[in-house]
Image (tube, rainbow, N blue to C red; front, side, top):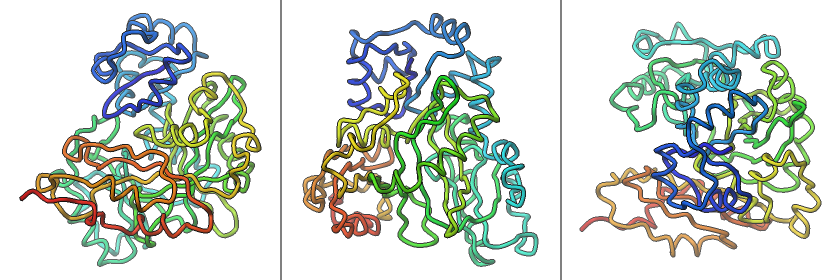
Length: 389
């Protein structure tokens, strides 16, 4: 069963739902986003009853906005408890404290942040909303100067967004140890016996050690094979703590130089936001993560990456880091952008004024041409932006 909600749903996901006749809940938000009346629409009341009466029913949401619907309509269920615990970063840290006893974290209210002096803190650390999304309000703080600058950025006025409180709540933050290592994002699910099934592992590229953006993620057969077993072992421990079954998730972790996995967060009931990581291998290689989850299927990497083992598959988030206000932008030149990629699979253009991003690029890149990913990683995108006259 699919819970579709704002801000965005991809054509690929809707086509997958239609092709397989997967049930989709007829919420007001879903109906506003999807106009196809031939889908297998399920009335909300029936969907609520089905989920309550069948805890093993597979639920997937394209957006964390739908978590509010779950809390409102399924508040007494195990599903709601599992979702809320994973979504709350403080609660999540408490749950895995026995696995990482030396990992430091502290919860703090927004109005208390400005009272903290450098003498109260251990550098370096990360501060972010306890309930957050899309790297909003996330800061790496290395020294007292960083802390002064960060405090200036953490205010109600500067952190306002259109996301509901179940997705982004800036009233409480978490301060935690800065994790040194390479960052990875994992799409996976717990099958009907609670076993972890990994569908994708993506390396999150950063332009510097202070970068917290979501600009570039890429995957390959080599990346998936290198980390699959260790990631399964860690994610299995989390699943056992919450008795997760038939449950999709998107985890973000760092892996240090010794191979130790330290989690950043686990996002419930979805793969990567904005239909990105869930669409990537389907658009590029025909491997449909949504179908694999719904059908309780195991991926075969040799088949998925047949004749493609020398390729990288990436997602580029076209966030507006240009310093130019959206109101001063008349156009974004996607044709020019397309020419900067060896083999673009899809450029998903979005209205910057409506969505806050210019869109997403899905690309195939030869391993010896990773410079094109590094170039877009460090780009301010001004070369593609046309200004209002």
